[in-house]
Length: 311
Image 1 (tube, helix red, strand yellow):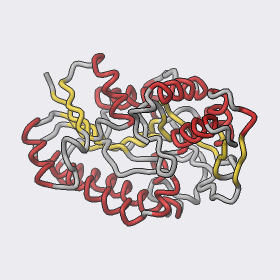
Image 2 (cartoon, helix red, strand yellow):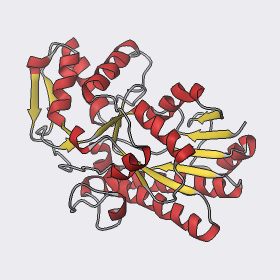
Image 3 (cartoon, one colour):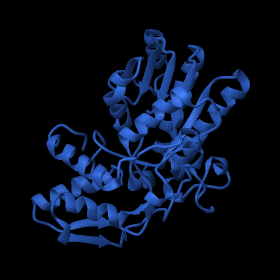
């Protein structure tokens, strides 16, 4: 049986892959920072020597929400560059047959026409609010292409839109928008306080449920035979505002009449609309989990796992 190593295996997408792993015929090895420090070359090399994987899904990254990206730019850049360089170097050394590295739509140019597609990745600088992280992810794409060109390696990149679901990081300060809002609403209801949402709520995003993304990554591993980047996203018509997300979360907590939008905080990038046309032309049809249903599932999971989840 072929061996599949997943870095970032305890994270949002890694856990989603673990949850569907029984549907696939691989030996899965889901690795977290507790198993290996990917910032350390020797430790990572020892990991690859131990498992000798046939395939790698590279999800591990140093991540955070808008305000972490704005306040810790050196950390966001240096740590991600180091992790990515080391992981791909080991993939090459151990002759991994296929590597799928996970990027983000935040890496696309800030000033551009929408919807964005796979061909415009380097057509301008990313938004200043997360440029350090974005450039580190762009360099992962550049390095993957370099391995393709120099060694004919099957190192490819997928670009998901905003991911949410169970097993996320629900940190109030460093989490992404959906998990941090879920945690904040939980606390606000518990303390009978206003549910304060940072920013105007007007920015638009496409959100993909973690299990949907996990299934699409596995499809990419097994069925996608090109070496070009591939956007993994819900359809354009499923783009929603942060206000919609906040109200949906509040509804899940039965706390709808207590929302306040604090416009003293930055909204970040207004929109990042992605074109999933290439994916849909290849896969033909995929029924994405509706955002309202996905948020209800995520809120239910958070409440049940409050004591033990990352926050």
